[in-house]
Length: 310
Image (cartoon, rainbow, N blue to C red; front, side, top):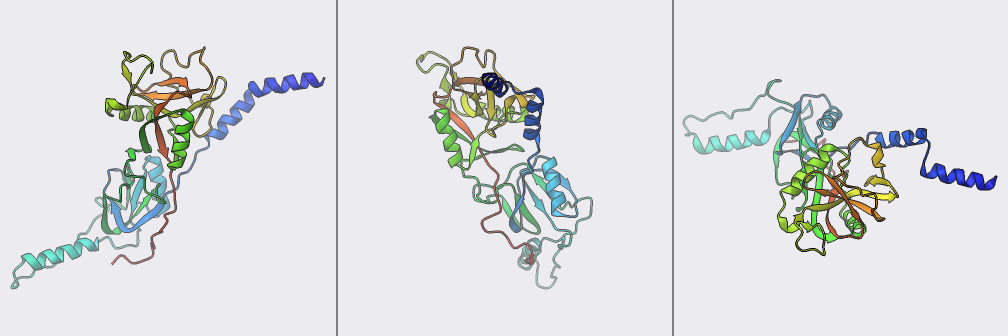
């Protein structure tokens, strides 16, 4: 009787009931709400705008940014003056230097109507590399998903997807995993068509020196771009993402023809190609890899949003 119970438990562990599988996938499907944090007061980002709207609160702007898959946004509080005082000062200085003393010109104060001024600007990419595109604007505050530590200068923004590091150093899967954790992220999550194709498109734009041969012992093989990503066979015949989600919970798969091979050796790990497909290799093989930087906040030095912007 005891032996029968043990065997039944083993069967269930490898082949859980359909209801248990559904519950597991439902738990994975729970939407993670990424939080935006303020990083700059009386300033805005000049990065590409992918959505404009007028809202009553910063929470509404954040919800709109999530709907548009933005990574940051500029928000102008409703009660704040609709004039950028930096522009007023600049115009005053220009008028004093260009207009003759006998006919001084009054500074032009820009006024915006409802149709041409929006107090919520959703951005496709966040500020990084030392806030290179931040500008002074007393109407706005800047919010981002990456507020605690700005992504490093060698990071790459994939618009509306995230921040990534495309590392050329070839490591086995375990070392690549640890390197991404040390960098503040994880191996890139690719279980969606947008992520797979956008990341593979970027791989295709990289120099061929980053590529590896199909067979490291055969120098005649054509070079092929392959980068480790967050997909590995933790359990035999079952792949898991970098977020420890079962791949069979996702509808999108991009296996290359013949992958994963039936006679593959364990452990097996996935690499992304420049053609938007996934290929499986022994995890001990060394390849370049893609790290996805995790969102972070609040900022180490949180801005005082109640301070007046004069």
